[in-house]
Amino acid sequence: MNLSTLTNRDSLFRTLRGPNNEGILAVVLIVLVIGMSIVNPAFFSVGTLFSILRGSIVPLVFALGVLIVIISGGIDVSFAAIAIFASYTTVALANNGGFDPGLVGVVLIACFFGAVLGSVNGVVIAFFRLPTLIVTLGTQSIFRGILLAYVGSRYIANPPASIDQLATTNVISIVNENERAYLHILVIPVIVLALLVAWMLKNTMFGRGIYAIGSDSEAARRAGFPVVRIQMLLYTLVGVMAAFAGVLHVTLGRNANPQSLVGNELDVIAAVVLGGASVFGGRGSVFGTVLGVLLIQIINNSLILVGVPTAWQRTAVGILLIVGVGIQALSAKRNAKKVFVTAPLEG
Image (cartoon, rainbow, N blue to C red; front, side, top):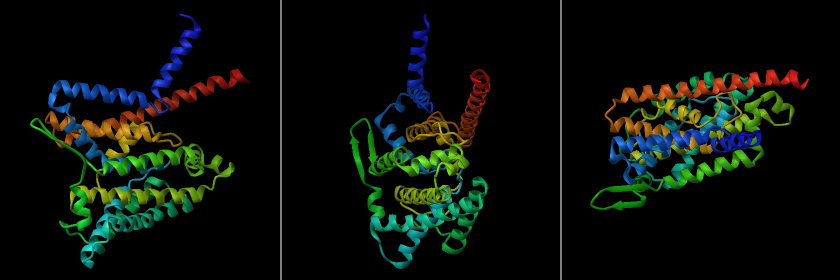
């Protein structure tokens, strides 16, 4: 086997693997689906596919926001608190005021609250340069405390009629003797949002600035990127996306519960990291994040089908997160060694 053949094979492997190991994740997904279909033939059905897609709607919107933050070199654990604050407050305002603002009105009001709360994170992080994890941990508690103390802690079972109508709308319905499968219409706006985020990251100066800040914020500043402005816009945008996810959550559940969503942040962060986003910043893709979210959903569904208790599902997600971060750390260490060995040779 000559050097040219080895080089071509290595090039083909790198292409299939993808820049953020998306190819490897896709293979893992396929193997997992085949394995679960062998263990339980009922798993391989349109109903299961639609169920997984429905279960991925809210986590994927959260994950797209977390992806942006992680690419910029930060971490955000307040997105769930922002989501339930914005959506619950919107529903409570509508119910207490005795009016239905309509679907567009609900989304706009919730996104306004999300933008305000997200900008709080942005201002503190950008101007005071505090660790993002500490800031968002703090704001998570603050937002949640304000919600329960001043907005309400009561479970609302009757959201506005516009939300209630959308909750039962499906884009595809399959009903026959063998199965009933429904694909919810909210899959469509989430797909559109994913495409928009991918386009924004790849084709706009704002997206390039996020990657540049994640790689080296000081180098990004010297290169002319307005780091403070980008960070403020970034966290405001993530707040808006979290609020949108909150509206989707309320719509799918047909209720508003101030105690929900918070506590599931680990699943979302694990999905983004498994999707190839580097916890060190500067790397990540929407495609990998979508695969990561699907992987977490399939694993949770698989564990339920084989009768594994819920507590072990959390354990499985935690193990996956550690494995994902561990692989990234080993990869970073290996690349550092390559640079160390190559530098003297070039000199």
